[in-house]
Length: 142
View: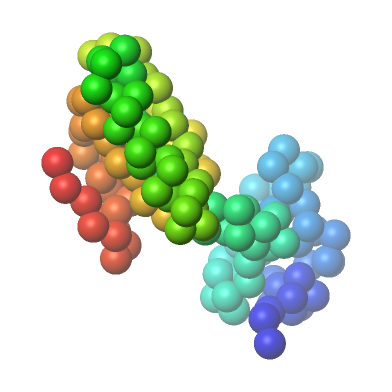
């Protein structure tokens, strides 16, 4: 049985409403209380309903980060990749970066979407993008 907000509230010594506020961006809650709630949630393995929904949506999502979609070669590759992924029940999200842009300009947004995989082409890759992969079981290469 998955942990509930009520169990988090009990573990953190707060109300269920406080637990809800802790997981709602921008909601009014004291920093120390939020920290205590998030620690209790992590300890018991609680995942908020919003995060569970985001995980379901992200499952099977492949993100392609490209810095040169004007190259005549890329539309064919992207089309082939997208069709192949769709046939296997996955979806492709494409981030088109300005030519010669550093991938870090989109890193936070890309990682926040929690894709199953990230493919980076024709972009300057820094260690910031590979850090999350290095800290999990994900594989990264350059």
